[in-house]
Every structure is written in structure tokens, then in C-alpha cells.
Image 1: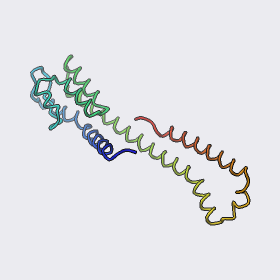
Image 2: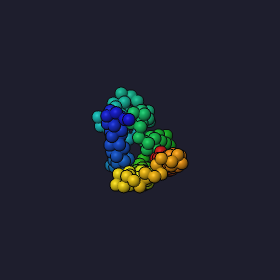
Image 3: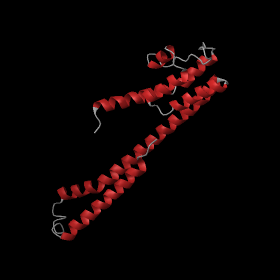
Length: 185
């Protein structure tokens, strides 16, 4: 069971992930607007004000190292794409604004795909929950509304064996449904 702290950390990561989607566009706008250049020719991208990224660059770390450290702190899945694009542009040159615009499109499409997959998986989990609880729910309804309905077969040993086998098969079905809708995005 996750703790409150784990919940807050996970929520903060989701908020940072949502904010990260606009970062390449902001960087592209700054490079297209002829932003100031650092000593090594890389754009002075100050997207994450208040974080250690700006401090690391200010105190002498190169941009690629500072961005990689940011990735290790935040853990955003799309950040390595950004780090690689900036590193390649820094070593080979090219139009960083255009690279970041294309990267922004890729990140937005990946984010949309993740949300779509997440919603479809949630739909599958809801279906699995309904399909799993329906037989038990119907048994309980019939048992409480008409107590004598199962009275004649409840004392038989085959009834208990049959219910045990049905429970096992339901467990196998639940496991299969869980494996179908639970995957890493």
C-alpha cells in the first residue's frame, strides 16, 4: 500500500511531466529569438528556474552534464531525447530551434499516446472488475433473497468442489485480465 509521501512524489512527477511537454517549445522560441549564447556556443536555456540546473551551469558544469543530472533527479522519460538533441547539436551544429520544434512534436505525440493507452487500460480494468464481481454478487443476491434456493445442494460435497474449481478459474481469468491491461507505458 503506497504511503502518503509516495503519493505526493508520484503526483509531483506527473505535474513535472506535464510541464516538461512545453519545455522544448520554450527552448525553440528562445533560440529562434537569438537568445544569449554561453561561452561554448550553446543557448542559455533557462527553462527550469528555481532548480539546480541553472545553478550547475552557472557554477561551471557544461550544459549536457547539467541536463543529464536533471534527468537523474526528475526521471522524466522524454528528457533523454532532449539531452541527446542538445548534445548532438552542440557537437555537430545545426539549427537548434528546428531540432527542438521537431522534438516537441514527438514528445507531445508520445504524451498523447501514453494518455490514450492509460485510458484504454483503465477501461479494461473496470471491465475486469465488473466481470469478476458479477458472479459473486449474483450469488449473494440470490442467497439473501431466496435462502432455500441453494439449500438442497449446499450440503453436497460436489458443490464445494465445484465452487472451489470455479473460484480457481475465476482467479486464472483475473490474472489473465490483469496481465492484459497492466503494462509499462
